[in-house]
Length: 90
Image 1 (cartoon, rainbow, N blue to C red):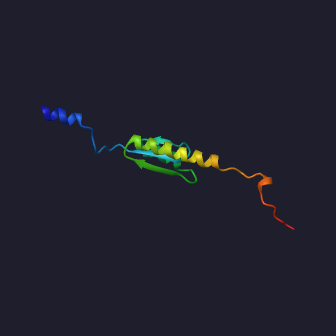
Image 2 (cartoon, rainbow, N blue to C red):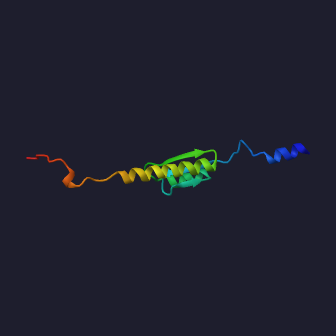
């Protein structure tokens, strides 16, 4: 009887559940079915997606990716015309 209690209280190490993250696609996010990933990436020009073993890893990866993307977008600024070097085009 003690053996049954131990086996039910132990979490499964080798879960068949997969978690997919669509980083670049029609609707970025965490998905549980491959068919959903295909639907979000099939007609997208440069899709980016990955499979993870746990939902926590998947959500952390998506958050990290989105955080990095927002930092690169805020760093890019177009220079004003006054800041450009004076070139002689004649």
